[in-house]
Image (cartoon, rainbow, N blue to C red; front, side, top):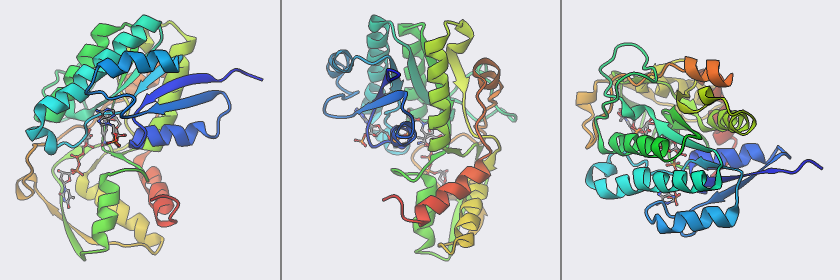
Length: 301
Ligand SMILES: NC(=O)C1=CN([C@@H]2O[C@H](COP(=O)(O)OP(=O)(O)OC[C@H]3O[C@@H](n4cnc5c(N)ncnc54)[C@H](OP(=O)(O)O)[C@@H]3O)[C@@H](O)[C@H]2O)C=CC1
Ligand SMILES: Cc1cn([C@H]2C[C@H](O)[C@@H](COP(=O)(O)OP(=O)(O)O[C@H]3O[C@@H](C)C(=O)[C@@H](O)[C@H]3O)O2)c(=O)[nH]c1=O
């Protein structure tokens, strides 16, 4: 029997953590140990080293985060504790054990002023607290260990947890018409596709010492959309299955005021991930339709 590789994943209920567990369930070569609060609390750095030692993983996947973008504006200290101090302690624990760390980050590290997709060497410039806390998290994990891949993803949706796709389906059952911003552009990315990609990157880090596999990478689905485009695709997929659907009215960000501002353009160029890791995520349209089908079939809560 092949010994299974043990991966510690932070968080148990997160979209990416649950997607990793779902994908690992069909593989006999890896074992996912998902750990959340209270055993591992990113806001309590003292709990981190002990948990890592106890689980004794071969690799760590840092998937937990403070992701409430608007709320972060009024909980800055907590957002930084969870998104920067916690990951730094995790990277230190990984370095002490001599194991690799895969750390998830976000498109919101960018200002959105660029008119083409962002590459990894572009200047960052987050416009909100969440983005700033995640950027500091990236910097801290990279300085704590050389054996790290920071994967910036975006606009994550899945059958699990809270996300824009599930919000749209819920609102469609309540309102015939929805006003959705059409002047913010990004790459809607399925957490299940993220899980597949993360597991390939993890394999690569364990099998190769190549420095080109370490550092920062953009990792989103193929294809881009505005939030309004994404909403329309969600409803087209839902209507095709006899599910709820609404008319989407395109509005501008100024018509939808929120505590945190969002970048107008956070599209990411993922060429570096393809060239260094041989990983390309599928087009978002097919993944969106598949996840809408899965949700409507009631396979998830
Ligand atoms: N969601 C998105 O649209 C995007 C996410 N990302 C990044 O991808 C990663 C995964 O995101 P996603 O799966 O969507 O996140 P979710 O919001 O679905 O889940 C976040 C997880 O973090 C856990 N968590 C929060 N605070 C703590 C803490 N103090 N200690 C331990 N665990 C904690 C939560 O636990 P609990 O369930 O108990 O609250 C939850 O399980 C994150 O790094 C995020 O920044 C990047 C781009 C887009
Ligand atoms: C519910 C709703 C939202 N919107 C807008 C608000 C906002 O500009 C956009 C997306 O709203 P949300 O609050 O769902 O998404 P938001 O929390 O901004 O999503 C972000 O989460 C973090 C964690 C990330 O890292 C990012 O990549 C990104 O996915 O849609 C509408 O225009 N109409 C609506 O009815």
